[in-house]
Image (cartoon, rainbow, N blue to C red; front, side, top):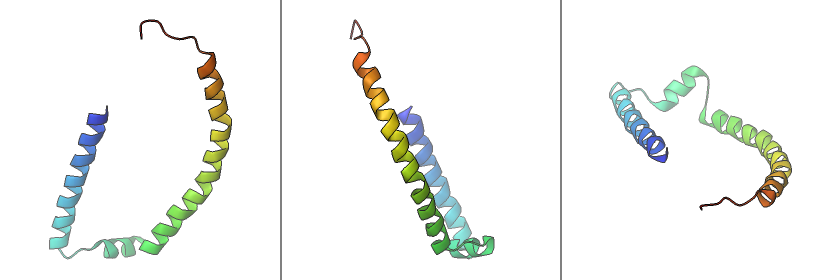
Length: 83
């Protein structure tokens, strides 16, 4: 499982670098593409920050409920034989 994820990540990185090199040969930059689409690096950072600000409180609330439930189930589960 981890091997597949790592292999896929490495392949993605290599293809992304290759595509970036080809686009650079045509004098196309990331800033130009983002500007044409209507994004700026500052806008992308702001959207990411807003997403984290929204998700973090929800994650913490869910963890406050799920961790005690998991702990009780883990403590009450009978031990496995053979391990």
